[in-house]
Amino acid sequence: MATWWEHAVFYQVYPRSFRDSNGDGVGDLDGVTAGLDYLSSLGVDALWLNPVMVSPMADHGYDVADPRDVDPLFGDLDALDRLLDSAHARGIRITMDLVPNHTSSAHPWFVEALANPARRDRYIFRDGRGPDGSVPPNNWVSIFGGPAWTRVTEPDGTPGQWYLHLFDAAQPDLNWDNPEVFDDLEKTLRFWLDRGVDGFRIDVAHGMAKPPGLPDMSVVDTAVLRNSDDDPRFDNESVHDIHRFIRTVFDDYPDAVAVGEVWVRGNEQFAKYLRPDELHLGFNFRLVQADYDADEIRDAIDNALAAAALAGATPTWTLSNHDVEREVTRYGGGARGLARARAMALVMLALPGAVFIYNGEELGLPNVELPDAVLQDPVWERSGHTERGRDGCRVPMPWQGSEAPFGFSTNPDTWLPIPANWATLTVAHQEHDPDSTLAFYRRAVQLRSSRSEFGGNGIDWLDGLTFRRPGGLVCVLNAGATALPLPAGEVLLASGPLVDGTVPPDTAVWLV
Ligand code: GLC
Image 1 (cartoon, rainbow, N blue to C red):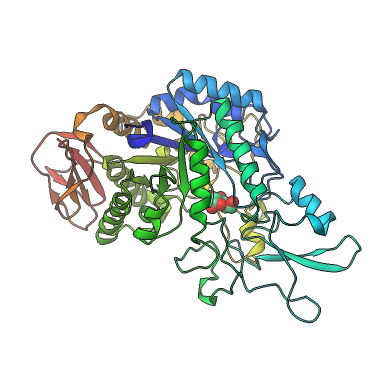
Image 2: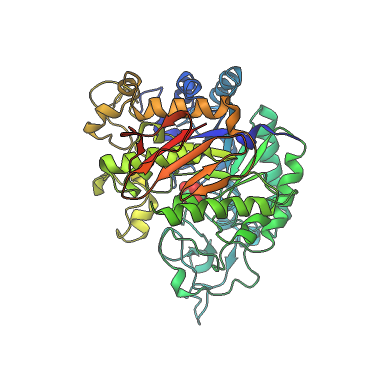
């Protein structure tokens, strides 16, 4: 059965940073609704909203205190309904973020667990090691830096047990051996799906299940925000039971999609998440991890296709998100970084499957070097100020005007400052320039969804980084240092100027 997401262009909205409707300097749901015409003109099929549930915002919403309500910072349930209605009226679907690996430490379950040691089984509490229990139960570290265990003070005031948190101490990991955790997730899924939400991106979909006995990890895996396939904290076999359970709920909503955040590199391991009774889609991060290098790019594409094919699933493509450095900067920054980012966007949009664009990518936004004083990512504190964290890719979108906050908010004091030199990157500025990155993205998305040459699954490599889709589209990427001859055919779109009938370095082109 054909499904809407098989060729969909998803647009990731980081709600804090998209658009602020109430002047508090932080983006919100009514801001997203106000931006829907813009998103329609970009031609996207669906949005993925980062978490908007009730949260103390220790990790900007990935610490959920009430999974079945909207945080006042972003609006309320009515604001979500307004967004759903307005988006659906434009044919745009809305997917939300689901955080099943952990809750906030402000969640009533955790508050109860602290107050009453007999009510700790929804989380992972253990006694410490050593004669006085002062050594953590194992040597695991947090993905955000520092230990993955925090010791609690018991109700009688004595130092007590430890609880596990793979992320911040304000994000205690749930115990997925407890059936109550399953029941509650089902309630959450049905709550939003019944409201008309079109699916979920599932956070840390390779986490959740912990290895029996919680064995120590090897010290080589301790780097902050790093993923490796032999890390005992992730990708444990029983995680698949959880996905099968989630899928049984989704099967009651046949038009809803489950997209997992699966930081697993090995194709066979990755494909397991996409079996017919598990996730519909899994984020494949190989393109994010590839340098701007011909061999690495081709290898990433081949492996992402191979991994999806192993499960008969739809491939997915993404160049960036709210956790990684923006690609303009990753590829070298400046004019060259931007040229490469545009070229890679053309490659990504030429590939078969579902594509995810991260807000601001269509404007060519670079990462921002923020001053220490404004950094908010818990990674900055937890790493002892050795890792700056992810704030640099989360700076609010510039919409219009010549001064910050560029129409993002009426309040100049935005939650992260917007660089003054983004005046030429605003939506309004780019809308008037036919060569702008925004104009380029609009054209690319429109061609991708309207031309039959993008049909068919799979690709055939012709030469170097040139491939052909079964429908006839040819995509050429020049990741080398010298110009390439332009193949025969009609040029549909190029990521930069084609000079004297050649494809210059750092340029991609579509032909039919
Ligand atoms: C995922 C999210 C990230 C968050 C983490 C903990 O990796 O993408 O932003 O910090 O999970 O929930």
